[in-house]
Amino acid sequence: MLSFARTAAADPSSTSPEQGWDLGDVMTPRGIAMSGAQAAFGTSTNGIYYNPANLPFSRVYHFEGMAAFSPEARRQSYGGAIVDSSTSRLAGGLGGQWIQVDPDGIKRRAIDLRLALAFPFSDKVAIGAVGRYLRGEQGTAQGPFGRSLVSDGNPDGAVINGFSFDTGITVAPIQELRIAVVGRNLTNPGTSMQPTNILFGAGYGNQSFTLEANGQVDFTTYGSAKMRAMGGAEYFLFDRVPLRLGYRFDAGLMTHSISGGVGYVDSRFSVEFGLRREIVADNPMTVMGLAARFFFDGGATGIAGGGGDGSAF
Image 1: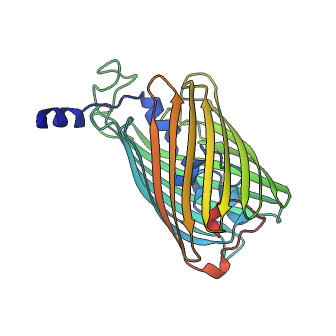
Image 2: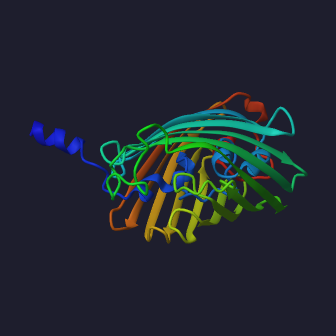
Image 3: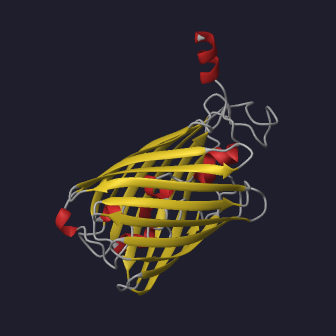
């Protein structure tokens, strides 16, 4: 029995590299729970990873630590973020993640660092940008073609080591409605570890309820453009407990996923948990995430414009 356990622990991922890497997205608990539908209403620290133009829509000063896991992809990530959108009109944030995927297979490891800035032209329009640094390594002779320039790692160092950037715009024609567009990795690095894509979405929300739908087009990972469709809903129970549900269809992987999550929000902190499971897939993947967020100034954390990331209260 002990020998079997040791062997099982060293098994490679049961998912494909593209499935486990998931476009290199940082998996926050709210993003997981809403299946990635955060382009319009993902504020606070979520804005760094989904749409920086959302940062001015919540007046916050937040610190967050987070972790995410996928047992099938053998993926784990740990990181943190800080956002300040309360001390001036120019909102900003910093985020960093350490990511590992399939340590007994492709052996992919990465450091993902981001700096976000955003500015509101009015209470209806904001723009934002994120500078992104990614350093990624991968094991040699681990890809589907063995030692190959196509699929192999670099024995002398990183397979990717460079900068890119995202830009976004969010428009709120009325207080409860937001429409957003985000361009990601716009320097076109030309690698599936840092794919160029466009994300667009619309959402309706108030202080207790948010409903959002997003679409995403990936131009890099599969050689031709592939679409993702994502939808999520959030409801605040007792003004303290966010309940979240989501659905995602990925045309690149041909997978369907459902998701959910729960949390607790106090005047000084929040804790959140999210879970997503592929229900239609050749090799279904599960992702779960946990985070704790601390509010530096509870008196400056009211959401401007209504709705959005409930942890921004």
